[in-house]
Length: 484
Image (tube, rainbow, N blue to C red; front, side, top):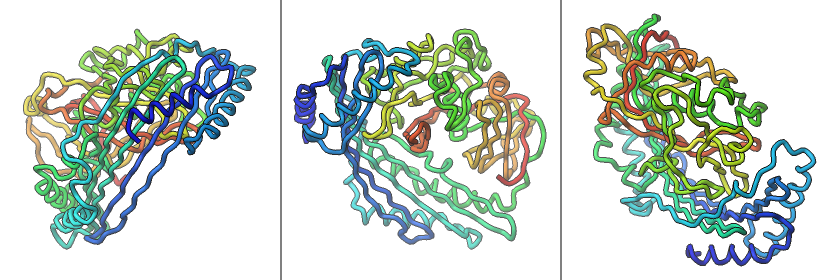
């Protein structure tokens, strides 16, 4: 259905609702996905899926109720609206904080993902051929015992209208690719991937699948898997740690993103995934890291995975500093959470699908570049360890103490990258770790990645998030070897 036609249909459906609500919103979503993969040079998965439906949201006496339907008919939408109304009425007797009408301001606009090559520029057979060839190219020696390659595409359309005049259309093209080689020599097993499992996720088209350096990178990944078999174990010591952008993805996600979600800080998330060491009174005063630490919430970056024009309540997306010069400034919270907490937030109320209510989520969280070239950042280190690509992680339920394992590392000696190290790990405590941030790479070292697997909420919502970062250097970090 054309964009205008859907907006017209939703607006008509909205006009037929006869419930005494202070505000009503309809969010229709249509999503189509493909998942193709190969293992050891053979096709493994060729799947397509689609889903569509409407979420009805109502505001009644300061309380919000939700209900959804997968049928875009007047009868179904009216039934969902009545159910949402009854949920809101039931909630008012247990109210924690009233939601004002100002939390749903009217907005009109559109957003479209950037794209160069549409998804249908390659047939399913051609995509499979590329994945199979990636597997063959990864197998650089007989020591490679398994190869995998994956490509996922998703197109999502979203229409939002409200009783106070909102009309928003957004169209998202998302693509994720992954390939990896596993090598074995006796009891030693090492896996090397292209920057971590499904870290290559972006908004755009097939230009992110067939890249100019694809085959050189595939060959390098296979060779590094074999290289790790004979590499020395990562030493156990307190030293200088340098993290590449593909590992900074998870470092930012786990030790900054989740702790700053306002609904988590308010206690709404603790039953599922823990709380946060951050307190409401910390905003504006807490020294989260060194003065080199500048973290932005930025859904405006072209091509980054979680870019958008409006969140799922219609709030316009803007670039904001969460942490500036090391000091905590604002949280990841909707207009409701901002009103309830008294803390400044961002346009981050997002839903995983049409049948989920929007909640406080990450989008694009980025570490802003500094002024060090890669050579300058490494060149001043007498001894340290450089690590790439997350392999596994653990973090406590307050997002305070963490331990991360990486796929690939290099020893740094006398200002140069030296021998390869296997099984590299590091651990820390969030504020102390970020306070040890000693150098931040410049724009030439900045790279963006993403993941479709950020889970939160009950029932669970798995959502797409993006993270960009330069290379970063940390002082006096505990590193150690050992399998993950």
